[in-house]
Length: 313
Image (tube, rainbow, N blue to C red; front, side, top):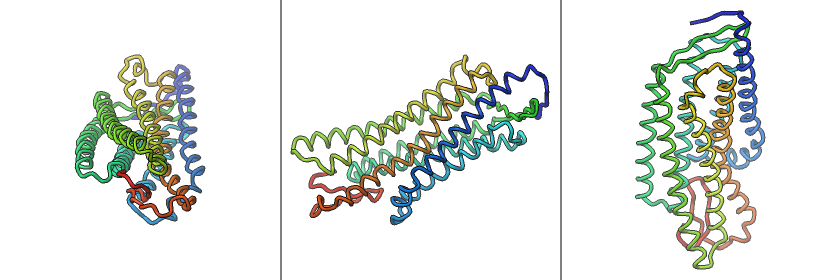
């Protein structure tokens, strides 16, 4: 349904929507800027390397992120006109894109943990079982939520806005996020356990060097990503507060939603690709200093990273 009005009572709503659109445009531009900033690394560490599963996953996350940013601008900038149907379709597409990217990042996390546990079959099966259980449930909840969504187009004093009604889908939305948190906590627990175990072994046998450094790189990128995911989850769960969702057209709601989108974009499309770039950059530095690792036995990482050690990694 389309609502057209030039009533001055809508001006506060128009102003809040304009502020929100500036936030979205800036955060979306930030994703594209981050891609441009790391493009040199991408050429060296991704495009010039042999194609692998991690290469495909990296490129998927990176370039789907750019698509996400463009679609987000088309939806939320009020000077761009779309019908309510088109806006609803793009909004549902945005939700599914974020879900697919989270699934890809989950696969990357499983590959990292599989390498850290030296390809333990038991650990791999456990991780895959938990991951599939969580994201199959999340996919079903997202599908149900999308089926009950509807949208209205507002043309207010020449600006275009779209409002969406999820038909009581807020509970489904928060349940999906809680399930996602469960998976991230499980992955973090596995990572911390094996990292602590290996750091203790390295200290006991006075070993270290490459293995310790690599585990430090893995844990650093994992912890930064996990903290960002927790921050995004806190914002998403904040929608359960009646004060926040009382008036979706208010300035307070638009600012809250805009900031939550900034954190979401950073988590998915800035820190997500760095789960692979960080490890490959470490590997490149290791190869550049190859004189110090001559004669050591390489163990292939899933991301085509090579660790050198005489102990179990």
